[in-house]
Length: 430
Ligand SMILES: C[S@@+](CC[C@H](N)C(=O)[O-])C[C@H]1O[C@@H](n2cnc3c(N)ncnc32)[C@H](O)[C@@H]1O
Image 1 (tube, helix red, strand yellow):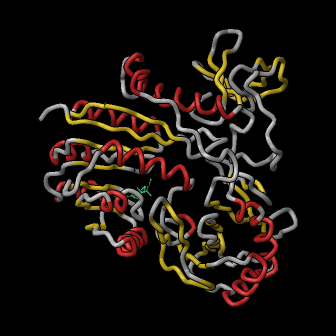
Image 2: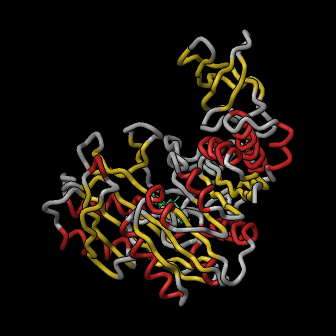
């Protein structure tokens, strides 16, 4: 399996071909959709001999491209994720394959193969009849696949897309009123369900939308997030329309309050595995000075502080900074929270004993590895959601005096190719 939706095969000529709709071990007849000098892309016309790893999955909407690996057995998904992490280490990190084999552990399986997502994000458009429709965007495109039900989501969210479409059509008529996205978060632990209506700033029928959605979808919180569609992450204002105005989740011993625009790990049970691996890897003791960079709402900062570490957390997004401060207060732990950019703030933190980094897909910004080496932590935990940028950073860290000690892929996203990796580095030069 590639690090993507396609399976990797060979044409009779020997050329590598990325095949949509196939799984590892299939023998398929394909139609080429792109033929380049060194590789081709194709889709399946006929399955000549199905792979023993193929699986019939519960039918969800055939058009949705959100779970491309659902036709592959779960055991094979876990192995393919480990293989992708190792490949990244070999290709981008320039590790000898033997060393990569030794360092990369088996993938930690998800407690749930379906019904695990605590969040879904639905794009908003109009259907052929000009009626408002909610759906998932096909990866990397503006093509919206209509969706009514999502078995990957936690139970309280599974049938919400259909109810939301109906309620929003009723509330907004044939207009979208600037609505471009609907975010929904649900927790089986706290029973909270939050609906976030992402709109452009300006007029919006708040009263009718809140009344309709509150009675048909019964959320514990309904908010409107105002942002420009092209720059959705630049939030202008969040308005509570109904209920609590935030969403809460229980993660380990702590309860996290999460505002609609803030990041939170999408698979709660697996996020607990990430925290466990980071705590075990860093072996903090009371008084250990730890920085948590790209800290979000405090997923790692709070358990580290509860374990006795002196924690400084750096986070760029304003809403997460506010959540983190409140979460630390509610957990009754002290965390020094710095709102700002990691690359700029890290050199100001002084000498560190240990460090956690959990950057977005792009990995560490240029200069961050040099700043890590200057701060000199003995141990570094790197939590990554992209094996290829991670492997690039591993190579940089190894050049800067850190040695990769272990790498554990953790499955937060069953039925997809996405994989999280928790890696632990030790300082090689004292
Ligand atoms: C993958 S999330 C991890 C959050 C947190 N560690 C967790 O597990 O919930 C990455 C976080 O980094 C933040 N971020 C993105 N760019 C940043 C930067 N340059 N400096 C600091 N934080 C940043 C994002 O707002 C987001 O909260």
